[in-house]
Amino acid sequence: MNDRAVLRLESLTKRYRADRPPIFQDLSLALERGEYLAVMGESGVGKTTLLNVLAGLDPPDSGRVLIEGIELTGLDDDARTRVRRRSIGFVFQAFHVMPYLTVEQNVALPLELIGIARAQRGERIAQMLAAVGLTEFAQRPSRELSGGEVQRVAIARALVHRPLLLLADEPTGNLDPRSAGRVLELLRDQVKREAGAGLLITHSRAAAQTADRIVVLDAQGLHA
Image 1 (cartoon, rainbow, N blue to C red):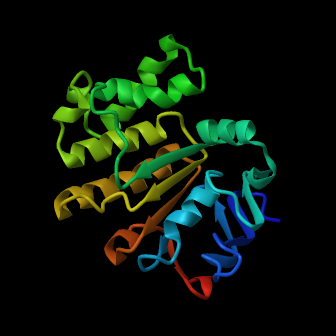
Image 2: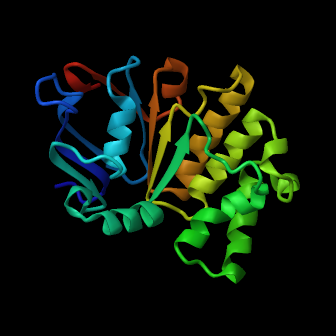
């Protein structure tokens, strides 16, 4: 067993119907602290389903998911929610930023959910907004930002609570090439500085090449 593994999946299988082929089958992988991994694959191969299973949002049919040695698949709903809130940061293609909250309020949400006192939130929020280049937008409603700016809010929100694991699902799919490049650079830099490890789900070779290593998900499983 690799003691440095932040994320480990062991013989993971997921299917939605018993009479249909599995979405994926017998997947195994270890992601170490400090590592940024890209998982590539064509549309429909199960990349987002895999991400949902890794986050404990969707149970596998067999196999195990471990976050720093804690078996996520063996926990009840409340315990899985606590692990997600404290140990996982999410960045999605659809952003999921609250449009009528300010930038600062959006970034504060994960800290509120894990009970960080208001007096302690300000410094962390300020640090993350500076890191993503949005200090001057702190009090602006998120609905007034560009797509690239909103995605940077999502990155700040995903990392502000210093998660062990960052999960990013096609985070640049809705962005123009210039904004996409900046977001990808930002993701990698912030994973290295703030998170234990990161996993990027993408169909883009250019996006994947910003990671430390690349694996491909297809009908045969996960492979380099």
